[in-house]
Amino acid sequence: MIEARGLSKRFGDVTAVDDLSFDVRPGTVTGFLGPNGSGKSTTMRMIMGLDHPSAGDVTVLGQRYHDLPWPLREVGGLLEAKAIHPGRSARAHLLTLARSNAIPRRRVDEVLDLVGLSSVAGKRAGKFSLGMGQRLGIAAALLGDPAVLLFDEPVNGLDPEGIRWVRTLCKTLATEGRTVFVSSHLMAEMALTADHLVVVGMGRLIAETSVADFVARSSRQSVKVRTPARHQLSDAVTNAGGTVIDDPDGSLTVTGLSAPDVGDLAASINVPLHELTPVASLEDAFMELTEDAVEFRGGQ
Amino acid sequence: MTAVLGAPAPYAIEQPSGRVGLRRAMAAEWTKLWSVRSTMWTLVATGVAVVGLCALSTGTVSASDLIDDPTRRSLVGIFLGQLIFGVLGVLVMGAEYGTGTIRATLAALPRRPVVLGAKVLVFGAVALVVSEVFAFAAFALGQAILSAKHAVGASAVIAQHAHQLGVKVPPNVKAVVSSSGSASLGQPGVLRAVIGAGLYLAVLGLLALGLATIIRHTAGAISAFVGIVLVLPLIVQALPTSISNAVARYLPANIGLVLFSTHGVPDRIGSAFSPWAGFALLVGYTVAILGLGCWVLVRRDA
Picture 1 (cartoon, rainbow over the protein chains, first blue to last red):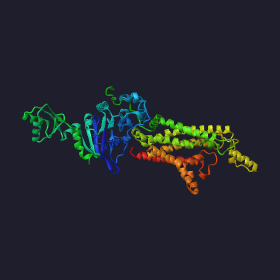
Picture 2: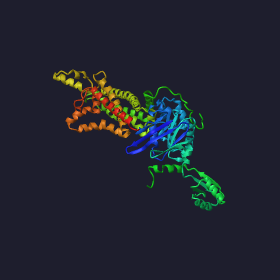
Picture 3: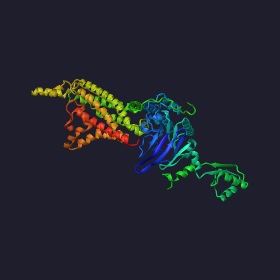
């Protein structure tokens, strides 16, 4: 359980996090979604007591991070990839963390095995790829078998197999009753991993909702249609007030009409349909919501 | 545990009572210190500098040379060693910022003064043991070389001259009179000078650690350290004598020089503090710098 109340962080004139209040509950994966520079990492650092909030506060398991008796046994955090001394081995890195929180030594080898780094455990971490660094960071987060997990952009630098692994890991950890808070700037990734979303833009809370509701709220749902009579259907849709885009693969993307509307319309003009798929575009929903809250935009 | 997913069973490890504290922090720091090669290498390099320069400064003595203070002569390598040792002290904290591990460290131990305290105690203990070993090794080697050279101690010459002139030798000079140019630990001030040399080196290592805690940047902290021990004395020397004489005794390097001299110090230091008063001042500097470092560590975002 993570509870943020009025959490704010200013760096000089820049407000990185602005009056953010949200709850992250156990048993589900909560996605922390926002464009780059929207204050996700700063928020994560404040949860872990690394950055001091300018105002408001945040508690983990009902306590401030600072007051947790055994922090690594209650909260596991992956904040940045490769935050490790390049001259230290993966095993030694984990061992220093284990010792600091009285975690048994065997647990180091367990988590190394878990993230698939056993074979390189004795190698100096400076030679690690970004993906291996991420795995080591995840190993460090899991070291204390914590009830709360924070992963900041965990799939960065991972190959497709690694991305799937992280996805499954997050879900499994949530199934075990843990609180899992995962940040990403990639909506599609969140759609596959998270059940719940905390959406931020320019440091402000934009939405705190389930993934399903988030999509449903979007006005930009579209329908993918395949038909041998493209021109006929296009004209009919346009006349009915919809918008049609010709996709390169020969299908049509219709916006402004629902899938049943398009089906009924096709039937009324005797046009056969080979495909009729409502496309729940999370990416669109996300873009729409954060439109006014993107700090860095090209072409301005 | 499911092998496919690899997630651990909840609470697979038992929760101990109590909470994280200094003992755990020190255990972590100990592991941290010895799990990077740079620690051993800088220690070896410091030893080579301290003992090697001693061999050089005593080995180049010829039998006709007057050795003013054979103890000091064997310990001059400390001034080279301190630069390398300072780098190690800087790295103990600076590497945390350079590599980003400070975040992992502070996430594991959120009470920051405890983290700094553990670093000071662990590195301080290692520094003290190693520095004393180097100081005694340099002294033993230096005196062995000097006695083999049959060099003549300055005090012996003074005594000889005094005798010829029929002047009484003051007791404090008489006490250090020896027939050769080498010293032994039983002579007045010698044991203090050798122990003091080790203490000086260890405390400078901690001062460097403190600088790194304030500056939070390895290269910057090393520059500041070199500035204090090497550049500052040069600047002071360049000042008019009236000012430099008043200021020189406050410089760490001059405090060190007094600490590992058995008698008499170069004129440029002016009216020097007594060895232990100087050392107390040096400890005071270090405590102040570490205190400021602690304040910075607590106040600033990691």
